[in-house]
Image 1 (cartoon, helix red, strand yellow):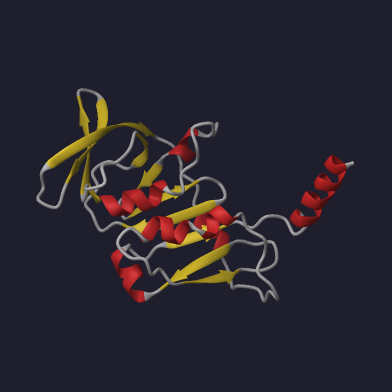
Image 2: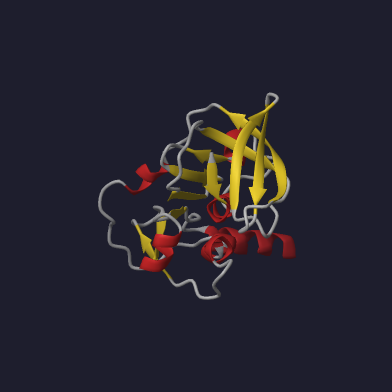
Length: 195
C-alpha cells in the first residue's frame, strides 16, 4: 500500500517513545481510510485517500529520507518494510517496520457531544502546542491554527484552514491538557527544593 510520506511524517510526530510499554502507541495505525497516531497526550487522524490492503499498527524503525514523497508498505520474506520514493518515483531508501495486530484506541470519541463553555484555555506542555508546525510546516512557514477547548479539564482540538485541511486529509489533532494545579505543584516543588 502506498501512503503519502508527508502524512506518515505528520503522524510520526504523535507516536510514543521507545520506552512506552504499550508498543502500539509507538506506531502509526493505518485503516482503510485513515492514518492515526497517539502517544496518550496528543492524537492525530488524517484521511489518507489511498488503497489499503493490510490494516494495522506499523512501527517504523529509523529515519525517513527527507526527499521521500511516497512510501510503500510491503511484506518481503516475512519482514515488513517501508520503501520510499522521491518525486521522480526513484527508490531512495527503506525502513524496517513491525506490524502489530491490535485494537487501536478511537480517541475521536474524546470530542463526543458539544464543546462546553470555558473562560480560559487549560495548561499544556509547550511541545504539544508546537505540533501543528512540526507536522504540517514542512513546506510552509505559515500554519495558522485555532484551539477549541471542549471544557474545563477536557481535550482541546486544533482547527486548521481549508488549504491545510485539504492537503493533509482533514486532520483531527487533539491534545490533552495538564491538570489545573500544575503551576501550583511546580511552585511547591521548587519551594521545597530551595529550602
